Amino acid sequence: MIIAIDGPAASGKGTLARRLATHFELHHLDTGLTYRAVAAALLANGLPLGDEQVAIDVARNLDLAKMDKSVLSAHEIGEAASRIAVLGGLREELVNLQKRFASTPPGAVLDGRDIGTVVCPDADVKLFVTASAEARARRRTDEMASKGQEAVFASVLDDLKRRDERDSTRSVAPMKIADDAHLLDTTEMDIETAFQSAVDIVANARKN
Ligand code: C5P
Image (spheres, rainbow, N blue to C red):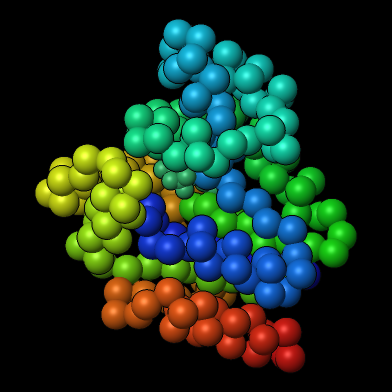
């Protein structure tokens, strides 16, 4: 059983993926963390973000069990991750790792930008989770404020729009809705409503 979840930054796909994995007793991989982990290692070692071979070497040594979400969620790491995510050879390396994860029984929920289109094109269920840029920026601003981090709505909104633009216009594996994905627009939903809708979609797909 594989559930593929894609969507733009701060759409809530990560929370939904984690909760769906618990609910359906599957493994969970936030594939954004794999790009973030490579970016973080490059930044920490003062290595260039544009050197594909260096990024591939870092990706080959990546240990999924050692990825620390609280460290990797830093804003500058997300920016750097989105910049290295345009490198085709790096993507190939990370996609192979993600495919291996997905094929481990009993199955998994993976979330990212290209799961339904590239990593798991044969997934049992595909969801594309989205929300208006303003709603996503509001949630991200509130989340940062609740952690005591400084957050200005207008600049969070600008950053999200810039990242969406880069992620959806790059030539390799751009973020897009798979033809057979279910669209879940959470602009007007709270997390409980979004989760229930997602559970219903997966349960229905499993019946068919
Ligand atoms: O989802 P998250 O914000 O952690 O992802 C960081 C960046 O990694 C994204 O902006 C995107 O450029 C890249 N990414 C990707 N493909 C994925 C997951 C993330 O290109 N499957």
